[in-house]
Amino acid sequence: MTHKEIMDKMIEHKHALLFVGGIATAIVGKKVLESQKTKDYAAQSMAKVLTCKSELEESIQDIKDNAEDIHTDAKAAKKETICVDVTDAEEDDE
Image (cartoon, rainbow, N blue to C red):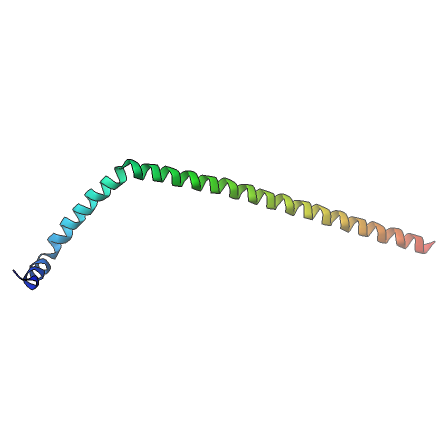
C-alpha cells in the first residue's frame, strides 16, 4: 500500500479513528492524572497559590491601614486649620 492509499482509507473511516483517538486520549489522561508526580505537582501549586493569596491579603490590609492613617491626618489638619482661622478672626475683632 502506498501512502496515498493509506490516507484515503483513513479519511474513509475518520469517525472510527476519532473514536479510537478519544478512547486513547482518555486512557492516557487517566494515567497521567492518577500518577503521584501529578498529585505532588498539584499540591505544590496549590500551596504556592495559597501563599500568594495570604501575602496579597496582607498587602491589601497594609494599604487600607495607610489610607486610614492619611485620612485621619488630613481630618486633623483640616480641623487645625479651621481652629487657627477662627482664632485669628477672633484676635482681629479685638
